[in-house]
Length: 486
Image: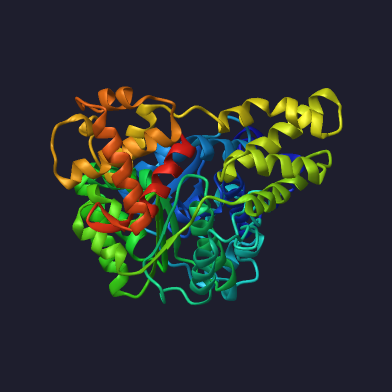
């Protein structure tokens, strides 16, 4: 008898009782700690339940799609959670079973049952029972949580932050919200903050936040496993859906069609959509006019690279995580030398912390200059002609080497002239070298391009950027941002 029950013996330090609700809370809490609250809500939530059998732990999924996903993505985490709560080497099996609604009397009968006899129930609404597991869920780490309070406001993100705050007060009033900007400007932070705030402050439970890669992977698995209904319930029967970096959907035709139908479904219901990308909708030509029209119909907000004051605020926000105090003069050095990417600022603070701890020294200006010199040097890297070509092609949505052909259409000639103008501004290349690089026979072509683009800037002219006209200064600013980001 002792051997039969030893598999289910809880570790002494866990002090988990044999009460059904406490076992549910302990197992789910362990999984939540491992994979995070959002992923747990998305893939486990109320739809997945657990049963303790004579041979081990049984994971019950509502359909084959969810079951396949659990096996593929969370097999390791479930095994670790089982080992943590029970004896190491606990057997974990999977099965498809529909969840039956439990009557209150059933819950009362399980109060004194042993773990082997318990069927671990899905989480129950708070108002039904004081034993419901929702109050036992751990709050997300304050160091990792991306909230509106932790987002540093600045001139380059003021409109986007105001829009996010408005949406958090009343989801659905501005949908879809489209945030765009270069890497590290705070797009993902704001999108996740909207999800976090609506879930916590308004009690909105059906909130899903995905990257474009996650959306694509889930959709393809649904196609292969005949689980489209379950996939669509997860993405369409929600109150808030956030999808990050939608520019990566380019070339994925079937996924784009699914995304368009998902957007249409949520907009018809008045639900909140939050989408992010590294460029404005007009530049996402590879996604097709249908999707561009849909996302342009909501609120489009640009987020510019952080200026010095914003970077300083970001540095000050990360500084308390360090084990030794960081003087403000060091934070100003970091903010002044690094670009507008918040991740670079965070990385610099982390390196200062590690260097200080490794050498047992206080963080000083001298230590910062020595330990961060390679980061500072990289920010002042030399711009080459291929760098300019790449930034131009990415901004205008052109194919590589398209600036070298002999076509004289505006779609090719205007970007080529801008490339020559930027080459004169950022490189030491001679007229002849620039003309030869871009396939021109005479250096006079470069001289003419330089004069023409300077005239455009003086006259505040427009150039064709994707499907829309764009102020030439704005186009140059976008190209220069790409150059800075490498």
